[in-house]
Length: 380
Image (cartoon, rainbow, N blue to C red; front, top):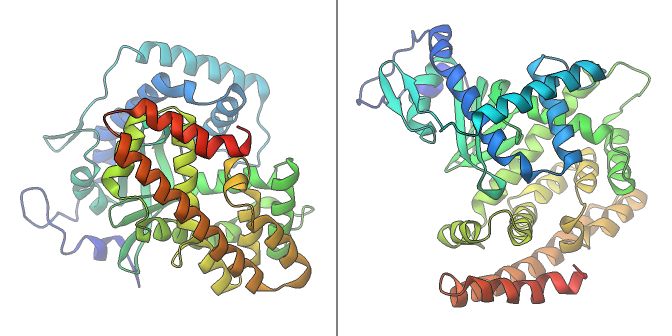
């Protein structure tokens, strides 16, 4: 059921327990909070840019430059202007290294920068949404966007943001907090365009499959062709978030404990990859949705994302997709999903056993066992 923003807010209560005022002035609110959120984004980037490889950091900065200058992702980027802008960012980050994250102030109220739930009670009436939390490597991540749509999906609140007004260098297209799922169209557009431009063999194979089913014509301008893909893939990534919400393989407390004990590590990367695949293979997750709706284009993009550990942890899906290409038989995808999920669950159970034994008293022993049992078989 689709509802507009006003319908969404009706029934919500403000911090003081009274109805929120729908006459909230967006410009006034933005003037108050936007500089603070952007500054917090810069502080996070300054402290955590080392999370990315040099190549990865450059590509993120390039996308950030285009986003900041309101350039569509397919527009050519002036190299000299980009490098000058990057120099300016690096100088800004140096000044941010001694800065602390600032609280969010709205209408005389002061909120912790991570308390997005309280902040959003003031923002949503103005058609805005603020996101905050911790990402990979426990990097604080922030964004502010304009609300396009809200709907209820399987008991979860879905909020779609049309435009990012503030973001850091970790612009995930989708994220979930509790029973709220947020999908950001700006990062999704940049993500899909990066896939269309991908040259890696496996990713190219998947993208070519996706574009074939979406009817992409490279001779035509990309703007009118990309938007229907964005709208379709929006629904697909929604079911990744739903699958993650429904999957109970990792108890929440254990999951948080593991991330705290092993930030910035390849154990964290392995755990996050495993959790993503558990969401994808869940009966209520990504692959089941793709199969049910027969979304061959989404299946192609799924293949294009199967690199690195995702490939190693879910080897059944690649030959299954290749078989699907020739036979158009969705049962081979379903079979791969079921087989892969069984093995992923067994891995998860073993990780839980190790964690219950060694976390928190002996994390170094957990790390040693993890390396031996999970990385060594892959030759890593």
